[in-house]
Image 1: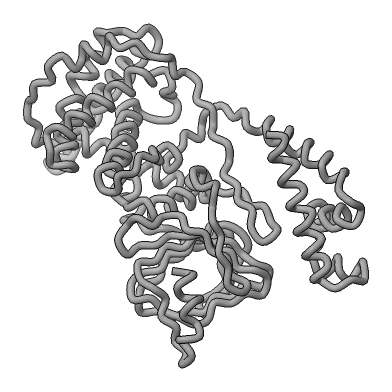
Image 2 (image 1 turned 135 degrees about the vertical axis):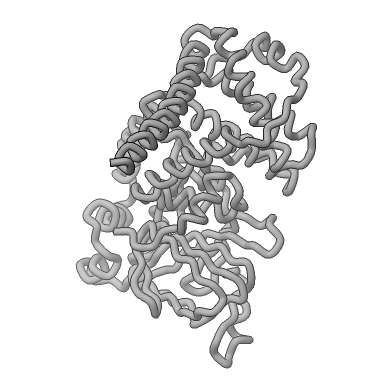
Length: 216
Length: 204
């Protein structure tokens, strides 16, 4: 049972195509796992569509021969849509099926530190880094917080932190104030988006720096 | 009494507004249907007249440049013309469908402008999930292949793969059962996975 969902504002920004790719992937993947949000997104699309097409500030424009050129362009019929093959990822001896949003990310380069493996997904949005994170059985990420935000979408398995236990599909958004130390008993696969490096709370942060760099 | 009358006039007015919108939506659905069924140029011209200025105005807000707003009009309307037969009226309004086509194209356009990436990822972010699924068959085929590959593994590796993936045991349970350390289970599993992957890759 999914307990954590993107809020209405984020769902609306996603449906309007206004979220950056890193967060769009997270919302899209959540929607594929969550029937409730899928329905809500559909309603949001309808109302965005309504607002866009009924915008009063409309001015006339000259489209030249655009209409004619479209209708006289010959094209291959696009009648059947074949659903894309699923995205899959193989890590730490296990094979996972991922939501469609990850379909383009097949040739992933994994790097590891202890029980944690990371593969970069999005890396072209200023400070934002988005990655797949795999945490093996019994793995823990030491207590940390972020200067910015941290979004975690749980794709498989489960993990627990100070606020509770999360299941597949949970969409967990933390802002800079909260610190946590996620722990997984049986292992889990997450999609994580952060806009600043992890800041470890314990005194031995220097030792943990490689881990922080790996995760961010 | 007077209040009651006032209320009922309001209702009629409201109904009237709603009805007008519905007619407009119905009209758009009908035009798109004609384009889908017989590539009706007159119907498409009507769609163009309604949507082109609206798409341009949306594009101007988004890109702040005339050329890009015009590209958005051109490409969205081209896709409507080509993809009309994919529209399924049971799933929603035609105007919403056209909105999603515009939204997807402008997402990819913005990405090209901002990151110089042409990954056309919008189709993966907003996949059409309600279309025919023929990948199931593919999956069955793949499972069948996979099962036959598992059978060709050396006995010790086969035991581990079957234990974990088919009988759903944990690595610890298997280790106890076979009286070997968990590390041995892990390494057997890893070897088996490499072999299976190689076999799958050879096949495809």
